[in-house]
Length: 88
Image 1 (cartoon, rainbow, N blue to C red):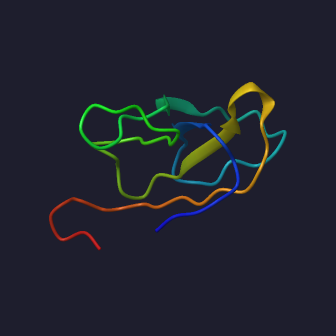
Image 2 (cartoon, rainbow, N blue to C red):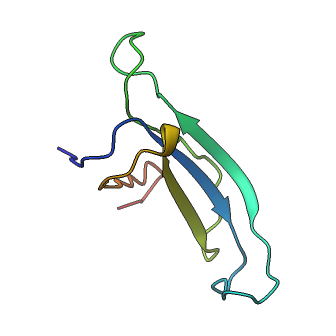
């Protein structure tokens, strides 16, 4: 099970190119998806964030930004699951 002390996180997913983004390089990221208050079991809204990203491209760098709602701070964990054919 995932754990952390951050309450009500917000999460964004961006993609870059096939090389890592270097600070102050002028490289830009492309927005992919975001979420806050992901649906939990059934139709209940949960205090967790969840992004279901499809059609990601192998070899590109992806970046996740995590922020607390209403300036909340704390620790967090990220779980990545490859649901594709032959994924691990």
